[in-house]
View 1 (tube, rainbow, N blue to C red):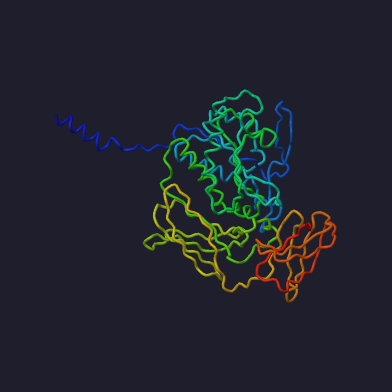
View 2: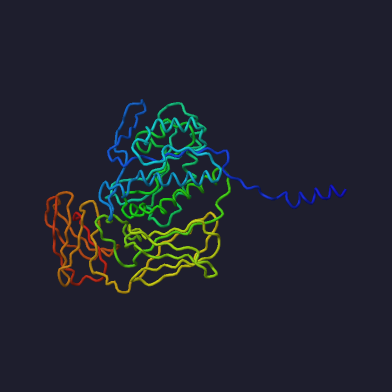
Length: 450
């Protein structure tokens, strides 16, 4: 009888204890897209009959404020993809998953043919395949939307329908995790699509895939504020952490026991006017200058310093604190010439606590006319104050213009327009007088007259 009572008590006390579940037994294949700092490499795309549809540049480099074109220390999609992928591999393996990866170095010789990558994932018997990329639309597009692509046997190769359905499900379910990023500025568009109906062709890396999987484009690396953020390794790794949380959810594993505090600090009034930062989204925080060299301190609820971070010199203002225990904290933000800001935050397990903080510089005098607005008619817009309310505007027309107009705006409303006589493509200078126009930090842009 005593033995029976002991068994019942044991069952009551321990029966509801949940057993920790990791990713043991799960196989994931990671493909860091592109590779090798090779701006003219071949990326073969196929028609349904197997013939070559297109050959295009394999890697993408974008010059930034600190890095000239083709500088291997600057932004390359291949490097950012590899950083994300290696961090995802580390997180997954720490959780017990078995991981294969198509490359671990950023060398041209390691960039395998796309068909080989798909065949390797099939032979590996992957439960999930992910091809890691970032997107591009041309800097004049001024967009930063989210895109996942999957393949559903668009090429008629007789794929496993169940696995292809799982791939579509993964591509859809991962969105809420991959877009958990309030540091960037998202365009109001989300696309999850089969590759061929969306692109007009089947992606080479997905075409021969016969296991569940998809390609994630992530953010747009030619949206210049994002280009500069992608120079920060911690910011890049946030994508890996979000993808890792998705896989934990998808395969029923335990989520991380800690959270992440991340964000960016920017000048509250100084408009970013560098020619390599001109395609910011109007009205967003990306209009404003990120603060280099700011000191960010994470302080717990008892007033103890947990960690500190100094923002880099690449004009992103990004800071990240990893493995933060759940609880209440204060984020202290300091920079030379700026008033110190403190923000109270609550950290939750497996959650991202991210924000953008604007800092005030009391000594900064806002100009009446700020930078020109990058658009499809003109680039390289420079504002030069002459005297009084007179300004010389320098810009490069991308095409001949018959009836042009210089529009002065506060970012939302048109305040004044100046007629621009017929001009030919190329460098143009124009003097304007803003006497009587109210407001500061006004913008200007070149348009066709209506």
